[in-house]
Each structure stands twice: as C-alpha cells, then as structure tokens.
Amino acid sequence: MSKEEKLNIKGQNDTAMGIKKVKVRIMCNDFLRTIIKYECRGFAILLLLLFVSLNVSGQAVLLDKTTGQRISYAQILNSKGAVIGTTDIDGKLPQDLNDEVVTIQHIAYKPKSVKSSLFKEDIPIYLNPIEYQLNAVTVTAKNREYIHLKTYFRSYQLNDSCMKYFRDGYLDFFIDTKHKDAERFAIKIRNFQNDSLIDMDKERANTLVDKYIYTPSLDGLTLMETLKKEGWKFTTDSIDSRLRLNEVVGGVIRIDTIQRVLRVEYDVLATKKKTPKTLFGYTTCLENYYQTENYIYNSEYQSYMDLINRKNYRKLFFSHKKDIKEQMIEIIDELYVLEHEYITKDEMKLYKKTLKSKLASQVKWNIDSTIVTPLAPQLEQVLINDLSQVE
Image 1 (cartoon, rainbow, N blue to C red):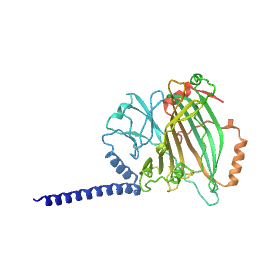
Image 2 (tube, helix red, strand yellow):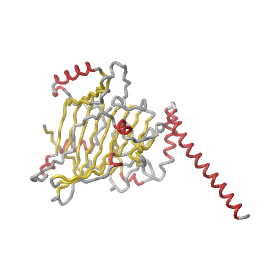
Image 3 (tube, rainbow, N blue to C red):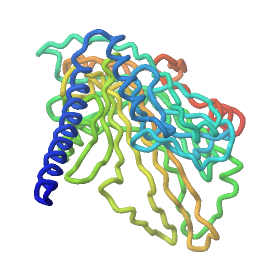
Image 4 (cartoon, rainbow, N blue to C red):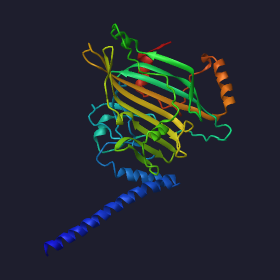
C-alpha cells in the first residue's frame, strides 16, 4: 500500500471519529433539553442521576439528593464552627482537610455532618434540599404597583474562625415595580457579640472597628436582573449552565425542575482584582465573595416576587501595620422571604402606617424551619454559650 493510500485511510478514520464526537456532543445537549421537557418526575430524576453518575466517577463531589445536581460554594465547618473549606463551582469537595467530623451548609439545603475523610474517596456526598412551600400569587394589572416582602435575616462574622458578631431580625420591604426603588422597615432586630474577643482588640489613635455584619437592604434589581444587565450570558434551555462574561466564567445557574426552583451561584470577584485597601494604617483585602439566590422558576424573568432567599459569603484579611499577623474575617449574610404579595400604592401607605404604630415588643421570635435554613449546630452552640445580647 502506497504512502498516499495510507494517508487517505487515516483521513477517513479521523473524519469518522470527528463525526462520532459531534454526535456525542449533540446527544448530550439533546439529553439535557429533554430532561426539562419531561413531566414525569420520577423518570426525569432517574435520567439526571444516571447522567451525573457518569460524570462524577473518581472525584468527591457534593450533590443534591433529589436531582443529582452539583452544589457550588457550600461551606464546610469544623467542630468549632470555623469555615475550613468550600466546594468549587463544580461541587468538588476539598481533599486537604484534617480527618474529623465536619458540617456542610448551604442556604438551599439542610446542614449535614460527615467525616471529612469521605472527601478523599470516590463517592459523592448528598445534601437534602429544603422543601419550599411555594404559593402562587394572584397578579392583576391593578395591584402591581408595589411588591411587599416580609423577611427574616441573619448576619454573622467570624474572626480567625471564632464567631465575634451576630445580628438577626425581621424586615419589611416595599419595592416600586416601576421605578425600582426599595424601602425598608426594621420590625425587630437583635444584636449579639463575643465580649472576650472584643476585649482583646487593641486601642489605637485611629481605631477602625472590624465589624462587617449589617442589616440588609434591597437594590432596585435582583441578582439575576443585575447579571443580565451587566451582560452575563447563560444557556436558557439548560438545567445546568455556566455564567459567562466574554471568556470569563463567573458562576453557574441551576434549575430544579422538581421543585421549580432556579438557583444562581455567582463569584463576585471573577472579573475583579483582589486589591488591598489601606486607611489609617489598616489594610483590608477581600479574598472571596460568593452570592447565592434562589427563585421560584416560572419564567425567564426573576423579580423580587420570585425571590425565595439569598446568601452572601465574604472572606477578607484585616491587619494594622504594627500587627504581627493579619486576621482572617468571614461574614455570612442570609435573607429569607417569609411572605410576598403585590399591593397598590394606597395599600402600601396603609400598611406602613400600621407598621409605625406597632411596638417592636409585640413581635415574637418564631423562626419557621420550613423556610429558614437551620444554623449549623456548632454555630448555634457558639451563639448560645459564647455571645451576649446587646442593645
């Protein structure tokens, strides 16, 4: 056989192999689109779990027990409540942890305690999703002037893995659907602090308080609306799609077709430089900043009427020029929508008047565990045993 004939045969084989690869890619894409279209819940779950199982072989990943989808940016806590790791965008679990019992937490799932040694094995770890009771809202042209949200929030801060501040409370929001203005009413707020840690703070001529917890407010746009406005793209007919801005991957959007929930996981620093900031001899540098929001999935448009909850996780380093070492500070902010409704302008005015006339003492602390993700047991114990309530 001549050299030219051998080259022709090789070219035909390469072409055939290329066609096979294209067919496989098309089949995978068609497969994902088909899952979305299925109304048979059991069959859709079976297919999705089968698809995921073919992709997680040989790696430890965190998965949704119901849908089999990967879980991004979940925090891993040790026995003292310190955040010692997170899953990455693909749900991969860190394998460089000490062997101990840890708790995995994520705003959309129930916390789970497992041995970190399992992260080094070729088996997935599953979390049970929060089963949201999502009620349909009657919408008319007349009552769409304002969105009224009743919410619960909590914000807590860890300095070098020890909880230093905790704040939670009930807030009402009124969002103007036309002008996108948001007004906040604080119904009742509690503050806690770790006095022993605060007593160790050094006093200087210009002292900056390392307190980063806050009472949340709502911007005119949800995270989903903001990302679309900034030009981030994702595949609308996929249940698992990367968020992309030009060539940058900045997060992922996943759709739970069983509960009809859309979750967006966003890395705020994906397109930003980690630049230290200095003031009065203090230096801060933001290392990680992840945002998660869950929405009722009923259309391509996710407004505040669709918001279920949201979570921010920030990690930064804080130091003074005279300090021997810098502090690691982590802040977790969570907001949960307890009730939502469309109201008219007159109804909004009447409701605000009622809010102002009520005393905060009339509000009872009754955190609904079916809506609010439980705090990890370690953090709950730290809050009870090590922090004191302050005005």
